[in-house]
Image 1: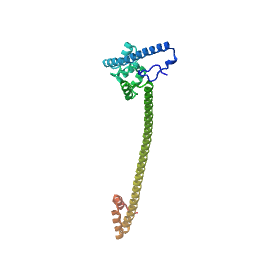
Image 2 (image 1 turned 120 degrees about the vertical axis):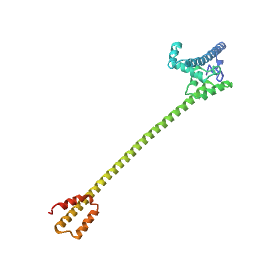
Image 3 (image 1 turned 30 degrees about the vertical axis):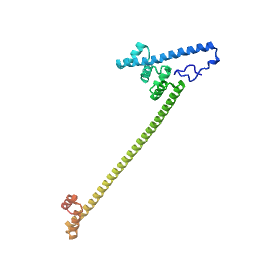
Image 4 (image 1 turned 90 degrees about the vertical axis):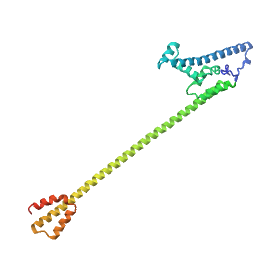
Length: 255
């Protein structure tokens, strides 16, 4: 059973009937005083947050934390909580005064969806406030949803990283395969050119040798019409690079 309802709604009542009447009356007075003090604390938190926000705007970067610690004796995290509460419940300090400070801090967190705090305020203003348990349930549900979203984002990012790695490996393999094919084609081209050059050289060598023999025989025995025709064919058969060789052979004495 709950002794204090921080929203001011008597949703869950304490069983005073089992107590002595004087004890029950004393406890009820204490509960009322505690609720009033809690209300003042919550309002003080929001008002303090407003002052801190205004002070921060007057200070240069890096000075605010030093100021709060030196002048107020509060750590930076506490100051941030006060300012977050003031921002989240701007102009609604009196409305949420009945909420416990811990609840205010939770509702003011960046991770808490703003619509939850808006619903809390709306329900209080409508005279149908949420109980602390209902607020906690909404906060827990939001945190669970946020955790699921984080896990899902992490799963997606992990899958995307794996996909990028796989694509990188695939692209690398494709580039290496393309480079290997290009290198193979280049080797084949060089081999083909070398082979063609060798075949040309062999052919020219054979033609030159044949022309040399024809000329030598012609110089010795006289050129026949057939020999002359063959020499013309050799010269027409792209043997002109070897004309100088043929002329040199002609000048050599017959052996």
